[in-house]
Image (cartoon, rainbow, N blue to C red; front, side, top):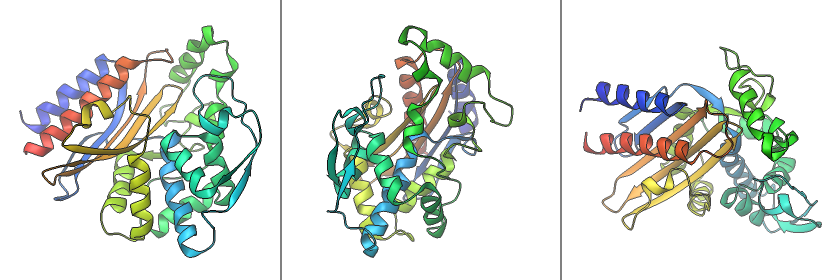
Length: 300
C-alpha cells in the first residue's frame, strides 16, 4: 500500500473512532518519517515532564542542584481517580531530587513534578529547551494544574459533562475556556516537536549525553503501559516512553529499539469527541495507528 492510501485509511479509522490526532514516526537511523498532521499542536499534559526531567538533570550536572538533596514535600491528599504517588500521600515527606525524578517519570506523579518545577520553573525549562535547539515545546504551568479541571468538580457519575465541555467549547484556533486545553495558556507541543526532543535524547545533540542517558533510562522505567506499549513491547524490543492525559486528550511519545538495530521515535497526540472519561477503545486505536505507521516505515 502506498503512503498516501495508507494515511487516508488511517485518518478514516481515527475519525470513525472519534479521534483527531497528531502522529509522527521517525527512523532515527535514516531520518525517514511518516505522520498524520504532525505539526498540529496540542496541550502536552504530562509529556512536559520529559523536558522537566532533562532540565533538572542538566542543573544537577552543572552543580546547581544536588540530586541527593532531600526536598520537603507537602501531602497531595488527592481523592479523585487518576493522580498517583506523592499526590495521594496523607502526610509530609522528605524525598531526594533524584527520587522525585523517578516518581515524576515512572508514575507521572504530579506532586513530585511540581517539587521539581519549584526548583526549575516552566519558563526556565522552556529556555533550556531552546538552548538545546529543541523547538515547538513550551512549558507554561505546574503539573498540578492537570488535576484542577472541570472533571474534578463534578460527581464521578457526572464526569462525562466535563468531557462534553472539553469537546464542545474549543475554538477553531485551539483556544479554550478550560486553560489546560488552550494551547496559548497550557504547556503545548506537536508530534513533530516531541519527536525532535526524542531525537535529541537518543542521538548526539546539544543535550549532554549523561543527561540524555538518564532521561532515556527514566523513560524506560515508565509504569503506565496501557496505551502504546501493547503494540511496541516484545522480547525483541525495548520501549521507553511517557504518557500524557488531561480531559479528552490522550498522548504518548516514546522510542522503540529493536534487536536488529532499528530505532524509531513515535509520537501520538490525540483528542477524543467521545464524552467518556475511560476509553480503552481510543487507546487501542491510537496504538494501532502508531504501530501501522512504524510498520510502514520499517519496510519502506
